[in-house]
Length: 255
Length: 230
Image 1 (cartoon, rainbow over the protein chains, first blue to last red):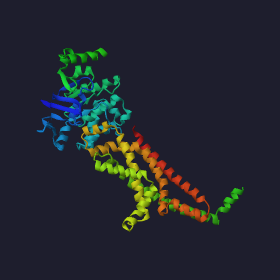
Image 2: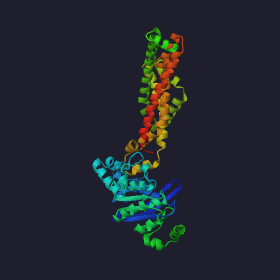
Image 3: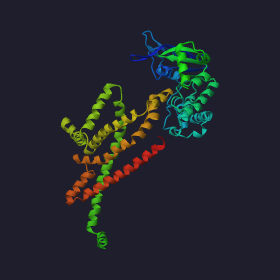
Image 4: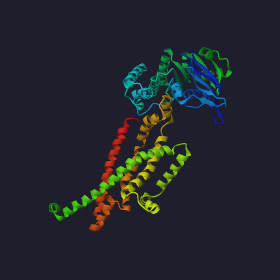
């Protein structure tokens, strides 16, 4: 079952076209890795999905609900505010720079939104948070502030914070790009576990190992367009497009 | 030994009565200064926040007038502003609507609100954009994001800058003497005239310093209270 459907998405900043006629679909339980050179519009796709950016044209459907569509005059027409908020809450997002709230403990970072956005009783939210912290292996950091956490720990708490809202889909915007190489492993491990639990995930990443091993499908983007898309096996071992080949070869050439 | 004899002789003497009476007057004045100080903070700190938010608004009809308001408040002497607030109604409407003390509180509050507004603005703009994005993605309303996520972080960052203004305010209360409010400085001036000595000025200095010593202590403990995270 399709959980996200994007059709003909256009997004530009002034003269600068970021995404042109971009379409893709995400099935429930699927892990999609989006790869490509920087500036190819990978992150913008996620930012449009999570409503951090408004699109110019196109249609986005999440869980069967239309979030935005092109109106008759050719402009993007968003769903009413209330509806939009409901749709938005089905999506969780993890940022490159974690964006944890520095004045809250790890625990409160996780409980704040469930309590004040979803209206869940605090005790219940706390139990869920403790469970999540346990799952990501950070039970002993409950009362630590973000400044006391390493990058890897911070990102794991950020993932727990997103999970606490019980989203249907998790969006990852280069979740390991701000981490020291030795810390990426612990974050990728948490993501692998989520994939194993059939969490639907869209991961913008430069971690080719993760894309190859975990993703069900890989999308290679360049200059705002999908150049190639297919199973990770096809993309990594037998890419059809010359540019995909060059990009992947470039990566392994560096390593 | 001579000093000890003088000190013992001082007790119960006329000089001691005069000394106590003078300190009584000065402390009364200091109490008025303290009232100006507290009331000004009470009004200007919240007012400054609203001015800052309006000043940062994308709506020109809101931000532009506030920009001019800040320019005037920071660009003219507070002394003139006090006189303007007190005398202007009389000259424009032919009657006064409020007394000297109220005029001082109004003038100080709108003046300090302008300074605080710019400090708030600097603090708000220093918060990384990712904080707003994280709050938005988690579904917080704009109001929730501001009050729960942004403002607490802003307060921590602006304590030193606000502290500067608060300490200046203690000393600025002396300006209220220009329209005859009997605060510490005015009382002190009267005393030096009456006694034909300048010792009262010295005592006033001690009182201002003592007040700011307390204010500094409070500011330090506030900073410590917010120091639990980086």
